[in-house]
Amino acid sequence: MSRKLSMIRDVDKHINETVTIGCWLHNKRSSGKIQFLQLRDGSGYIQGVVVKSDVTQEVWDAAAKLTQESSLYVTGTVREDTRSKGGFELNVTGVEIIQITSDYPITPKEHGVDYLMDHRHLWIRTPRQRAILVVRAQIIRAIQQFFDERGFQLVDPPILTPSSCEGTTNLFHTKYFDEDAYLTQSGQLYMEAAAMALGRVYSFGPTFRAEKSKTRRHLIEFWMIEPEMAFVAHEENLEVQEQFVSHIVASVMKHCSKELEVLERDVTKLAQITAPFPRITYDEAVDFLKSNGHEFEWGEDFGAPHETAIAANYDRPVFITHWPTEIKAFYMKPDPNRPEVVLCADMIAPEGYGEIIGGSQRIDDPELMEERFAEHELSKEAYQWYLDLRKYGSVPHSGFGLGLERTVAWICGLDHVRETIPFPRLLYRLYP
Ligand code: 4AD
Ligand code: MG
Image (cartoon, rainbow, N blue to C red; front, side, top):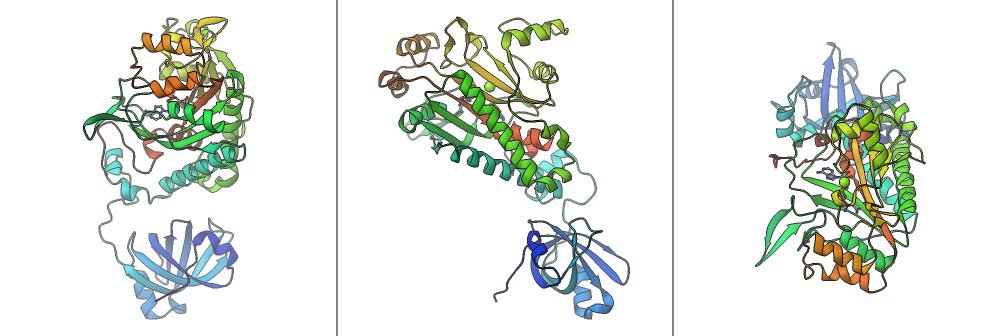
């Protein structure tokens, strides 16, 4: 049997026409002579109106049998209806049941977070979770568009790696036949090689950190976007980042207004996200914290409360630049005027969402890189290929990594990153 199905998102192109839609029953109300079916097909929601006097007994009975999340083909005439949420209604003429569902675990009542997480495979069917995943997909589209329009090539670094990028404390270990291997924490080192081959590149892939952190900002598996740019120094790196993040926010506001409404996101906050973004140095940030009653020593890393306090001074993301060399990664280029700090920046999102980007100019000098290898006790054998990049036509270059899930959490205004990815991998949660 072949039938031509329409999607709910396209009903505006079928006003006063009869369409058939494959869908699920989200909810139902009945007033004796009329049944109101809240229908969803993934692309949107529409109310189906079944009027007893207008349909056959068979259709009426089929509609009456429908329970939450039952699947069906519904046929009806599309009516413009300014009172309904989506602006359209379906005057139902046919109901063909695919499956009647019983005991659906997620009812319209409130459920606890653990229960919802155990039922994540069903939880994603709710309007709120759907809205988040639609925004995530739009953010991904915006990211690809930004780089594709600016001459960056998409490059895929490996997932299984023989060595670490961001330090060895939170690596996922696995066997690679007889060798040891690790799931990638960051594709950056490979992206540096790619930038020397292709100029401007970006990667978009999963990264893994075996961090024993149970916070609302940490995932064990998260997606990172890592651009790397040959012949680009620190200041231009920041300019690309602020253009990039403003582009993403503008794109979501343009294409996802319905979803942001479902999420009750205060869009006036998002409308303020335009480049340039403020920049403060690590030193200035420390002074600010100290003069506002925080216990803090120069050389420490900022925790979530520190980031939140700093970000509260701004209505858009803020760059914290020039961090102490000793607390940042081995590959960051020291400030030539002040080698105890590096040419790097973390971008802190507003409204308490924390660091969304980490980036830096990279060391391009072969001798200094060798020194860093000695200080950090990195194996020259394991990283010989990386050292080659400083030996054969080394050039100034910079890059950064944007955490996708933290960006989704911020733009959607969510309390926790667990809702930003279809199937979150969290500390002690690998199911479903
Ligand atoms: O600051 P990070 O560790 O930087 C790097 O990995 C660099 N190699 C990137 C580069 O320059 N190419 O991570 C970058 C971003 C963070 O700002 C944060 O948004 C996100 O990745 N991130 C996490 N997101 C969710 N859960 C975690 N456990 C995360 N760790 C980092
Ligand atoms: Mg970082």
